[in-house]
Amino acid sequence: MKNNAATGYEIQYCTNSSFKSPSKTTITNKSSITKTLSGLKGNTKYYVRMRTYTTVNGTKYYSGWSATKTITTKK
Image: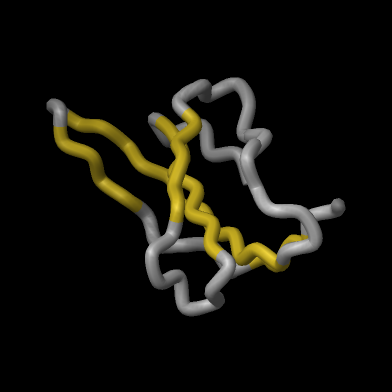
């Protein structure tokens, strides 16, 4: 969901549902909340979650994590 008050979004993705050693990426463009992830393994199930952050005086404040979504990559 797009949040107009957010400075950006942080996305975590992992092949483990408990998010041990997750990879992360950020979206700093407020006009779009889509991100294409490259370098993922084919035919693999990934667990993805995201949260917003707001920067105030150089300090980032994070929201809670979203519900986890499951995505399976194609070959």
